[in-house]
Image (cartoon, rainbow, N blue to C red; front, side, top):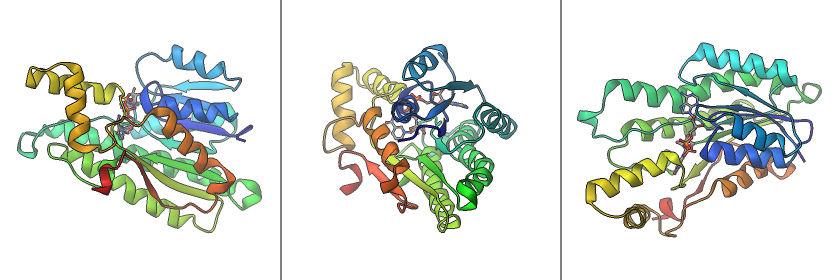
Amino acid sequence: MLKGKTALVTGSTSGIGLGIARALAAQGANIVLNGFGDTEGPKVEIAALGVKVAYHGADMSKPAEIEAMMTFAAAQFGQVDILVNNAGIQHVAKIENFPVERWDAVLAINLSSAFHATRLALPAMQAANGGKGWGRIINVASVHGLVGSAEKSAYVAAKHGIVGLTKVTALENATTGVTCNAICPGWVLTPLVQKQVDAKAAAGGISNEQATQQLLGEKEPSMQFTTPEELGALAVFFCSPAGNNVRGVAWNMDGGWAAQ
Ligand code: NAD
């Protein structure tokens, strides 16, 4: 379905970003990976799906590096048709103790990076398809884009912000073939959440399994993690013809978290 298209997925060396990159590659899209840590493993895995793959190590907190990544992607594959703004970090502390440097980093990586990548991707998407436009921008927000949780001020502010950015991007392109939507996962067992499980186990003197059950029990009625594969399938839907007129939604996959 996506053969010949190019998808750039930020923060795709791990977790949800890698899951979405896999799902888009399985539909035939060429992939530009980004993120830290092991880059060879994800590159080999995506290439094995029979698509072209490239990697750029832009630090998403740095606008000049984001610009270099967008230029690199266009040079590699012609243009970016699908942009998935996924890179994100977490920091947990009460507002009065929240390190200012962590606030700035969370806002830069979880929110401003999406603005920069979007503003740089839009002109080519708007010009595609003989000037009628074709493009898909998918912002990985969070259920924390819809509701708050204590001790996550920067994360909740950034995620509410990216839901707002999603709506404005969708509206400004509503008469074109460029859509923008947000995905709002509940708990997904990735390294980002494993750190929170480990902290809970250490603080409570409990096992990993008990900490996991507590974490789910506090927020997620289904008592199940959402998986990167499920989120990848939703991203594929947004890219499909059936998603042509889905514009500006913040779609939660959260086991009932925000329904309470
Ligand atoms: P993860 O830690 O597994 O992956 C984060 C990715 O972002 C990695 O590839 C990492 O290298 C990259 N990254 C971090 N800082 C970066 C930077 N400065 N520049 C470039 N890349 C950077 O986390 P994840 O759980 O897969 O999170 C992915 C997204 O999903 C985040 O936006 C997160 O807020 C969101 N999310 C996660 C959950 C969850 O439960 N895990 C729930 C809702 C939303």
